[in-house]
Length: 245
Image 1 (cartoon, rainbow, N blue to C red):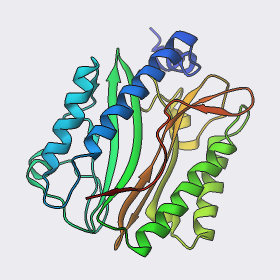
Image 2 (image 1 turned 135 degrees about the horizontal axis):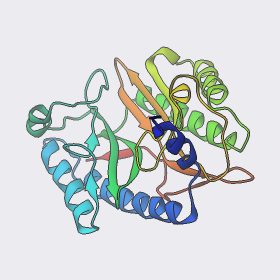
Image 3 (image 1 turned 120 degrees about the vertical axis):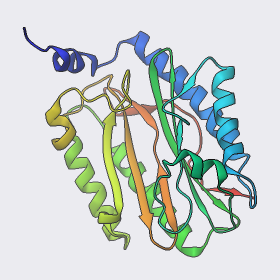
Image 4 (image 1 turned 90 degrees about the horizontal axis):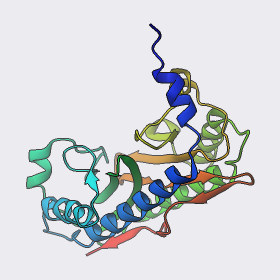
């Protein structure tokens, strides 16, 4: 008996056209749900209303949230994800909060994963500066994404750029991950720790998530399809900072 799980996962790393079509549809639904949820961010409003809006939008498109809520949130002084369901259900937004909307869902078994960041009220100078740096890091890493590139080298380049912008790489998550039947659809155990060489028709995300003790969490990511000459984004949502009421 031979465990062939990783053999199949390695084969599955490169997606067929049918799989890519499903991932594109999943990304479009996830985008619509994230946008709908973002409308419920306002000073004094409850997190549970935002969560319910996200889940209801998914359901209207025959999609499902991944996990209990389908979203991971960060708001407040450290920007960490909030995994406690009861805490999230009772939390209310306050002016100055940075809100990480890391939306994860499934459509016909295929995953969608994207993240945007909102600020309740006008962003501080620190929040705006970190956000601008995060956008630049994400854009530069994606511009270098093409067949033959190695994800670990791209992550290291992103960390150096973050440091040049005056930020601390140790406070950031900078990681590529493939996406498909799993939200982290790695093709080998070695790739999880050491990265892998990119191939055409891989669908993948680059997570840029900075956690600042004062400004809170700033997070951006999208799914992209690797092409012969670079990449195509699966979603069309802009990458502006969401300024909520």
